[in-house]
Image (tube, rainbow, N blue to C red; front, side):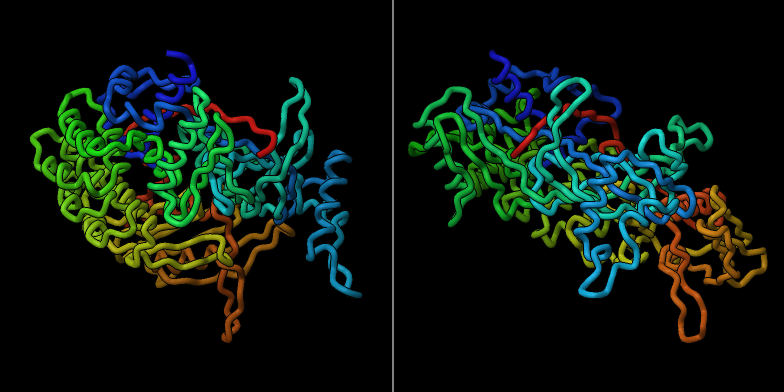
Length: 587
């Protein structure tokens, strides 16, 4: 087998087992089982079983591979403001010149008509309240225009910037670069923008944390935005006009409707466009597409459906791939699949139900619900994730709402994420901090959880009921920016804010013991109400996160604190994927 064909098989295998990128089955790998080793694009798994499987033979996957499935690294320079006196004036002349040019193009610096701008870009960069930073991020594979992603900001080396804590990144462009030598590169197209508040890990360096705290580096959660859709194309391993036309026809018949999803541009290349129904889950589209069968003679698909039903009962059968093959054929497979819902083997029940559920079979919901409720099943987290992915199923929503009461806090958190993906109305969401942070209230009869996200979007989630502080309460942030206090017999919390600009301390501000009100008070911008009372301390997301963690860990809040893992995989068990990045100069 040549290297290109093996890479194709590995990609097919990875995407079929990857729940976070359109497949399912990630969570069959638990802590007691061996995960597949992934290195440099290759999977040390039983490739022979995949090549022999009827879910692979005669499919598009057998004919080629998809180009554009790696993350695209982008970077640029920008300015973080709101640092008080912890910023710096230093900046290389070339970078400063480019930043000033970009800033003059923005209305806040250019001024309007005869009215000059309040501050010039030159004055802005010369203030210690600002710092020039390097921004780096990775545009997700198969991303569409408008899709967000996290970016890292780092103070320029050899500058006197001491901390980016509490700062906000001004809007800037991110570019792709082509490496021309070990030390030089050429800037390409601007393919993304970035802006937003900087989040610095508040736990690094504490206790036995292996991560050292670096206040000169932070993350803008969900701060990057792709300005163009990533280009995708199918590359045929053996160029052929006839095959290219047949593959294009198969894709457009399955997904196109009135629009053209695939277009053959040569004997070797077929351009792909993600269908509107799959915009939020492009990997699902690509996984199904690769499992489409090319033979179209009468009776082929009916026979293949039955043969797959026999194959899936084998111990080494690639169940995820078989389910995708059924989904590619369509609803005509349901009469065969439904007979497997009661099979004695768990993996047969699970994968057949997954395929049926994705094709709109309500009976499959009952089967998946059994896995979602089974505390001993390694398929449990995957079933929950699948319920979140399918927004059209009302019965799935009912199952998820029930799981909010599960004793396992990890299950409750994953259930919240699934409900969030569905935009479920059970989540009461409020924007605070001038829209920079979302505060979500989620009802649950189980023990309270304060859950904080650190990727995708800044969100603080209260899962449970009756969240309140319990005196005595005392908290002071590591940088002394905020103090929260309540003696034993206090009737409310007292908050004091220190500014980063003139080291001034605010008069005492008061709020109730309700945690939602405390979070609102901490995050909101300062406003004066009709009673001349100040509400809002404009505390950054990092500090709020640290405060909630400390208050929960000292039992000053009646809740368990949970910080988002980088993925649900990390929450339940390890499965590391290939992280090799794709270098692209233009698209």
